[in-house]
Every structure is written in structure tokens, then in C-alpha cells.
View: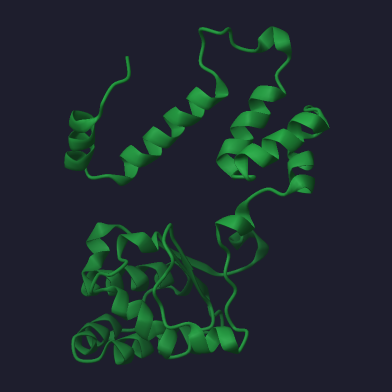
Length: 220
């Protein structure tokens, strides 16, 4: 969507393999190449050679390429939790220290990055879980008149506006009574539980999922 608006977006989704600094660096290069085209000859080799000795120099080598371009892309690093506390995180740390201004880091954990000085200068925007939650006016727009205000108020108090929970609930409450599931069918809360289970399973290694299944206590 942002590319359609004319913004140059280099998007890189992290996974567990990116805990290796060299693989993270190579992934960042591939992401930037989506916008700028092929990297200059020798750039990757130079950056990899600098990485072990001084990650800051490796980051600057990449940034020189991006910053000298007339397009200057926005770089989105998604899934920070995959490298949180890993050796490769030092590359993002170095990236910030050399002064990049178009970096977006997204994840399910708070990024442990050197942002204090940039925050003091007002150069950092942070979006947390509370910023993503629906407030009363947004919930009213979401319901679009299909749910009574009394139920919306109760829903907001019980869910704290959490988007996934709220959307499941509004969808269920807005259905006509004749189309709502019977008592023996799945309720919206059951559907939500299934959604969370699938999300949990997606993020876990297969062996951990099997262990949880073996240790789980099934209620009678």
C-alpha cells in the first residue's frame, strides 16, 4: 500500500536464522535491493569483512549506499523478537548509532536498542500495544451501528480494546439472532481461543509444541 503511494519501502521479515550476523546483513542488503536495485560491486563483501571487527563500520558501509541514493528508502525490520538478545542484534544497534533516520523496527518484544539520545531529541516515534487498542470512538466506527452502545461500552471494559478480541466480538454481536450459532456451536470466544492457539503454534518450534501438548491437562 505504501509503495502505491510512492514511498520506497525495503521490508525485511526476520526469522531464527537471522541470529547469525552475516545472514542478517545479507538479508538487509536483499531488502534494500528491492528498492535500489543490485548493490554496488564489492559492497556485501566489504560489509561482511568489517562486520566481525566493527559492526558500526559495516552498518555505515550499507548506509552509504542507501543514503547516497536519491530514493533513500524506508527500511522496515519486522519480527525483532527473532533476534532479541542474539549476536546479530548488534548490527541493528550499530545501524542506529551511525544515525539512520528511516528505520522502522517492529516486533512482539521491546527492542533493546540505543534510542535514549534520539528519544531526547524527539527523533523516535514508538507505537505500543495500548496505541493499537481501540478507544470508544474507534469501536463505534468499527461496529457501524450494528451493535447497541450499551454492549459496546461493556465490550470495551472487558477487552481493553484489544483489536483481535474486539473484532471477533463485534462480528458475533452484529449477526442477526437468526444467524447466530446455537448453544452447541462455537461461540466467538471459542473461535478466539482457536485463533490464539494457531498463533502460538506458528511461533513455536515443533518440538516445543509437542512438549506443550504432552504436558497439557485436558479439562473434563
